Structure formats: structure tokens, C-alpha cells
Image (cartoon, one colour):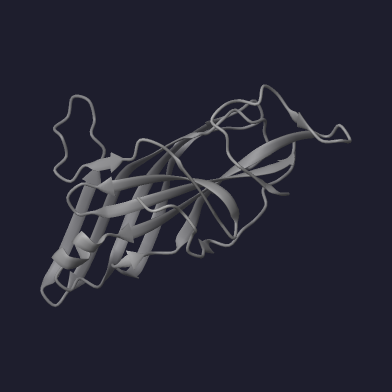
Length: 197
């Protein structure tokens, strides 16, 4: 199987190769965490802790339908720089290309400690009819194209407004034969070649 660049629109049916084999795609979602310099400076020596990010995914095609929330867990981590990405979800079957799935970071919860004591972060998205969260999650306006050793991906950045934790969601799209099972990958990936913002 080879990587293809994700598209924002439907291909209007199946892609066929030269032999007429129906072609489709599989999606994989990876999440990494970056602690921006403002947080590192404000933390006054916070070093180790844990973090959980809740990711909502809606990905629907004729052959495969998924809607739910998956969890990215980062335990016993050094809370500075960027943490290695981990795979949080992938399609279970090959399906027709129906465009990009809908992906949202719903919440970020973290706990860290140093010699001065414990510190916690609880951040969520703004919701209609609710008070605006003090540490609101803010998502960028558009996907950003990038690539690494796994192939081409689309990147969605979400940042906690007050604590300055950045959640990077990377969507990979793999071309496959319809009916094919997912291709396994390791949970961690190297740093990416992506444009800075």
C-alpha cells in the first residue's frame, strides 16, 4: 500500500487501477503534544507529569462508519518541547474516498509536579449555552499539509488559550484495495517536516 495526499472532496466512487481492481483508502490519526515556550517559562520548573487529550472523529463511507471519541494518553512525561506522536485511531476496512473526516480536540487534561508542588490543566472547547472556559481550546482555521517518514499527512493544530499546550492531530490517508485490512504501524513516529506557524 502507498500513501496518497488526503483530499477535501469526494472522488465520486471507486478508484480503479490498470487491472480494474477497485481502489479505496484508509485513514489513520496520530496525535502529538507540544509545550510552547510561554508555558515552559511560566511553569517555573515543572518537569514531569501526565496528559490526556480527547479526540472526536467522524468518518463515514459506505463500507466503514465511525463516530466516537478516542483518547491520547501521555504518562510520566517531561513537560517541555514536543512529545513523540502516537496513533490513536485507524480505519478497520478499506473504503471509498468520501473526503476528509471531521476531527475535533474536545478536551485536554494535564497534571504536572515539581519542587513547588502540583499544577493541573483542564481545558475544553467552547459550547453553546455554556460559560466560555477559562482555558479554552482554540483550533486553527485550516488543515496544513506536511510529510514525514510515514508519508504525506494533513495537520490540525489546537491550542489551550491559557496554558499554551498545543495538540497536533495528523491525518494520514493510505491507498488500498477495497476490502483490505489495515496496515499496522508503530505507535511513535519521528519529528515531522511541517511548515511553522
